[in-house]
Image: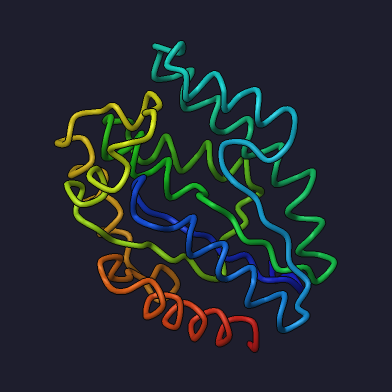
Length: 203
């Protein structure tokens, strides 16, 4: 189903620079007087933030429960906020969406993709992004960028885990899943993103 608003999602391993680029895109859309909302996964509201605390703290040690917790907060976010925004012509920007689940829980932790696809379709009403921007950097570079901050349960995973996650992301490349060089200057990357977003919004 096509909505008036566009769903634009950002993906990347922690340290890729996606949060910086989201903030820059928000400033750009504001300057254009576009209608937009900004969300993050997991999180987004009181329910999602409580689930986020559970997931990032590392207290959930069961992989099935982990997958379903991500699905629960995603479903709440989609049905309560994002789908209504899209219906009303508001462009929704998301810091992570289901591609993160495919990469982290699928390629990183071995959950079968058909299982994740089924759960995701139910949790999201099968809403697909109009554009996904994967900011690609080598895990070693990303880790070096965040070396001074306190690490959550995911950021503490071994470097091999993030190489598997990156391979998963790269396998998803398509007409709407765009791989961007996250090792280029911030402003150059922002210019690439602006061009891609303008093209999608104008469709």
